[in-house]
Length: 473
Ligand SMILES: Cc1cc2nc3c(=O)[nH]c(=O)nc-3n(C[C@H](O)[C@H](O)[C@H](O)COP(=O)(O)OP(=O)(O)OC[C@H]3O[C@@H](n4cnc5c(N)ncnc54)[C@H](O)[C@@H]3O)c2cc1C
Image (tube, rainbow, N blue to C red; front, side, top):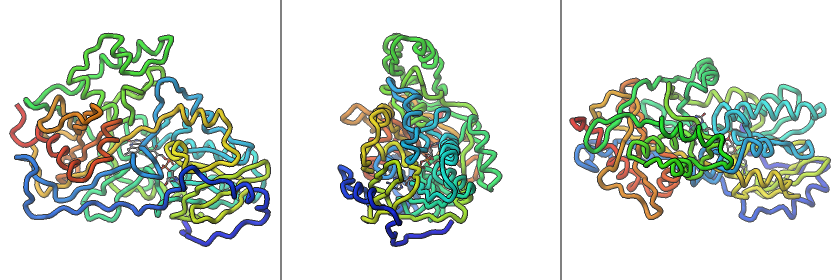
């Protein structure tokens, strides 16, 4: 890819759209580019334990996608009351000038890496169908959807420029490259289930390493317990799927008199780590996939996945787009730098959360049905905590751990949200490295994203108490 942070010149023929852009200012100014966060250094040597038997990690990294101005969350979800029609409406072109892609517009695999790639292909097909030879095209966002679309459009002979708000490509596929960790920490997508087989194969082809997370263990304060069981939840969701009203999962459980036992609560927390959705909002008509089954984890840099399609394309980094003006003749983009450029057509691949936050002002406003679709869908939250240790302090050999029931010292927050980190990936068996990754989803993830590092570390250590050595019954 050609990396540029050029001074952009107004394109020829920008006239009418430039006037439109003059009044095209978002409610809140476009966010300034933020640097890539670096892992918080922790003292090496023999750090003080946070709780007895659980040492402080020698290195620590946490994500905060919920607070990220270029994402506002992790993956889109389908709340009760919305449907795939909203995704289709969100993805529909406007005047054959303004096109939309990104995981939130995927009908089959929303919220996933596969859905993002498919949306890039879909939008390229749509644009190639109507574009003229050598049309000047801008792609906004250099995540997987944007990279896929840009590559296809350039291949078709269009003159493509990509604008990316961050300093790097990849978006929500994001490896923390600047660390000396023996396993590259992943800030975004890194766990691929059986439905992502095609993607896993594509990753292997470009040299991205994965490991299989084969076995699981569950522990509570009293030691080993059963892996959280979702049969009752799945049964209730299946029953509600034919109901006259789209109930949330929480409503359906209540209507069916299901007690939220510790086991079911742990299962729902696990489900939220895979979807970003809380049972209080997730639809039973269009429910999230049940967690479980074979999972592969990415353990090397994901950059080939994005850099390969971007190839030699012209990518302008650290350049958020803050305004879009469009009419039958073309589209003008206002950049957060104040500059404006005109194109024949534009593909927007920014996350749903960015559209919902009104970070990009549209002139004229987007059609009502598109705004309604945006409002109907939800941006879910998933956050991870990566902990690297000098030595393992645990005695469980399984790759995935579940924490069931209350843990000492972690009380629900003032909104009643349980912030215990209940799902852990143990990288020791597959990589030989004492690294643990805690994952939370839904409101717990939003709560964690808003906390300071010390509070996150404290919750992580307390959540791990059931797994410290000699803890199993
Ligand atoms: C923590 C986490 C865990 C996940 N786990 C999984 C998983 O296990 N399996 C799975 O399949 N998927 C997972 N996902 C979802 C997956 O990462 C996304 O579905 C996918 O990467 C989205 O790609 P995209 O191109 O649609 O959006 P993005 O990758 O978000 O790309 C959009 C790009 O637009 C840029 N942008 C935003 N605003 C502007 C602006 N104003 N101007 C210019 N550029 C802008 C962004 O910086 C970004 O680079 C996870 C995501 C997260 C965050």
